[in-house]
Amino acid sequence: MSESMDIHEILQYLPHRFPFLLVDRVLECEPGVRIRALKNVSINEPFFPGHFPHHPVMPGVLIVESLAQAAAILSFKTVKARPDDGSVYYLAGVDGARFKRPVHAGDQLHLEVELSRHMRDVYKFKGVAKVDGKLAAECEVTCVRRAIA
Image 1 (cartoon, rainbow, N blue to C red):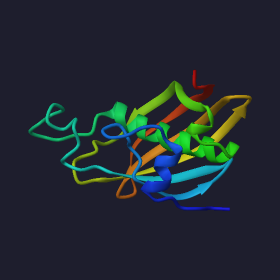
Image 2: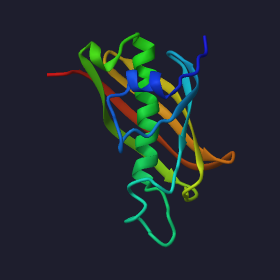
Image 3: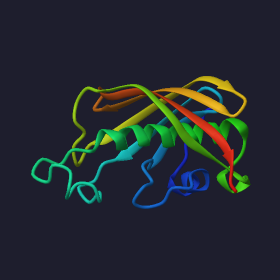
Image 4: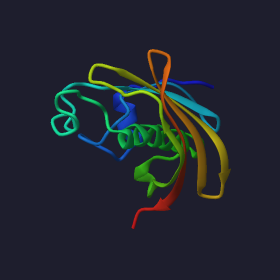
C-alpha cells in the first residue's frame, strides 16, 4: 500500500528539526520497498550565505542527508515504529556517492529511495535525487537502528 505524508506526519517519523529537517513531503511510501519524497530548496536555507554566496548551490553532503532522512522514514514505516518508540536510525555508511549536477536555490529535489537489504537492525538503500527529472546525485546509504539511551 502506497501512502503520502505531509510535514506534520513527517515530523512524527524524523527526530530532525529546523534547520536540519530536509524532507518536506512524502509522495509515496511502500513500507519495505521504496519511498518518494520532496525537498524544496529555498534561498532562505541557512547554508546558502556561506556556500557559494554568489552562486547558491546545495552542498552535496546535504543532498545525501536528504536521501538518508527519506530512508529513515521508510525504515520506521517498515517496522511500524517511530523515534519516540525508543529508537533512532543513524547513518552508518555512504557508498558510491556521485554528484551529476548542482542543486540551486529554487529547485525542487525529488528523492527516490529503495530498500536493497534489511538484516536485523541494519538497512541498506539505493537513493537517487533528481531535479526536473534529471539526475542530480546518487548513492547507497546504510542506516542502523539503535535504542535511544
